[in-house]
Amino acid sequence: MLGGCGSSSSPQDAGTVVDAGTVVDAGTPDDGGSPPPDGGTVEPLPCERTLGVCAGARRAQVDGAYEPVCTALSYGSSYETTETRCDGVDNDCDGVTDPATWSTVTPLAEALTQNNVSSVRVAEGVLVAVLDQPAVARIVRMDTFMKPLGTTDVPVDVVDPSGALGTVKSQLLSTSRGPALYYSSTGAVADHTRGHLVPLDAQGRPTPGQDGGTGDVVLFDHPVGGVASKAAVAAEGSRVFVAWADGPYLAGAHEVLGTVTDLDGKVLAAPRVLMRMTPEGAIVDRVEVLGLSTGGFLLAVLQETGGLGEELVRLQRFDSDLLPVGDERTVDTAYSPTPQLVELGASPALLVCDTRNDDKLAVVKNLFDGGTQETVAVTTPHELAWFGATATSHGLEIAWLSVRSAPVSGGDTWFDWRGRLWALGQGGAPKDWTPGPEPLPLHRHAQWVLLEELPERWMGAIVMTSTQTPRTHQLQAARYCSAPSPTP
Image 1: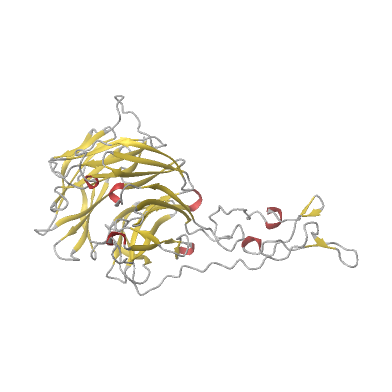
Image 2: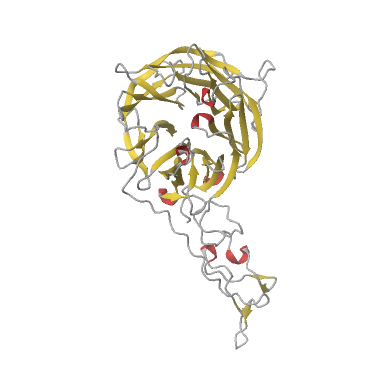
C-alpha cells in the first residue's frame, strides 16, 4: 500500500520570487559621479545592483576615484558575487534569498526503497550508500555542497546472490571508529537471515578488521529467512543494537528480537525477544531503533492489528543489556504513518503522518512522560507527504515530497507520481525548494527523503527521481538553507 500523508484543506504559500527589476543607470565607467555646478564635492552615483544587500548602495572611492563598477567595497561586507551564506538575506542582489542548489548524486539500476539507500555525515561531507545490485553496495562520497566526488564499490556477503534486490537491506551508521555499512541478507527460499557490519574510512572505502581481513563481521544469524532488521549505534559509538522481526515480512511476524554487539561482532547482549504483538493476530509492520544519550536504546514497532487503518506505534526503552526501562508507551496513528525516531536533546521523539488530523506531519515529544503532539507542517492540498526527519545542532529538521498521482494513459502506474520538495525555511514556515516550475518525476518507491546537517546551517536532502521513457532512476541532492536566524 502507498504510504505518506494525505490531502489537506490548508494551502502552503511557496513564496514568490522577487522581480529583479530594472537596473539603475550607473553612468559610464569613468563617470563615478557628476561635479556640482559650484565645483563642490562630487556625489557618487548609485551602484548597478539595487536589490537585497545592494539596496541604496553608492560607489565607494578607491585611490581617490569612485569605483567604475561596484564591488563589495560599495555594497558592503554582506555582499557576495555568488551567494553562499545561509543568513536570511539576498547577498548577491538578484532578488532571491538563500537559493537552493541541486546536483545529481548517481544513476540507479533500479528504483530503491529506503531499505537500500542511506546517508551519513562525515568530516568533509556526506557518504551515500546505494544497493541497487544484490552483491555490491556503492558508496558515493559528496562534499559539503552535496556535489559527488567519487564512488567505491563494497562487496556484500549475500545469502542468495541470485535473489531479488529486496532480500538485502542496508544502512550507513556513524561509530566511534568512523562510518560503517550495516546490511542484512536473506533469500527468497533461505532458511536464515544474517546481519553484517563493514567499517569504512571517511572516503567510504572498507577498512581491514583487527585480523587483517575485510572487516566484515556478522552481528546476528537468525534461523528464519526473509526477516527485516534495523540497526542503531549507542551514544558513545562503540556498541551496535540490531532488532529484527521474527518471521518473513510477507507472512507476518509476531515478535521482535534484538541483540547488542561491539564493533567487532562480539555479543554483549545475547539475542532475545524484545516485544510480542498483541492481541492475537497482530503483526509487525515496521521496526525502528535509536541509540539514546543515556547509553540505552529505543525500539519502536508499528503494529498492525488487522483491518485497514488499525495500526499503532509501540515504544519501549532498553538499557545496554537489553533489559526494559520503564513501561511501554503506545501512540495511536492512522494508516501508514511512516514513523521515524529522532532524539531532541536528551529526549526521544517520534515523527508521524497524522492523516486523521488535517493530514499533518506531527512530532510526538516527551514520549515517556505523557506525550505531547505538535504539528510540524501541513501537506499541500490533495497531496501526499513522503518525508524524512533528523535531529541537528539547532533542533528538528524535516523535509518532504508533496506528491500527487498523475496517471499517464497506457503507462506503468509505478511511475505515475509527481511532487515538489518542501522543507521548513525562514521562521519555520514551509518553503518549496524544487528547482523550477515543473514537479519532480517520481516512482512509487520514492517514499522517503534523506537529510544531513551541513556547516553554517545548510541542510542536504537526497531524493530519488524516475522517468518511464526513457526508463531511468537517479538520486538527486539539494543543498538548502535551514531557517536562518534573523539578521541583527
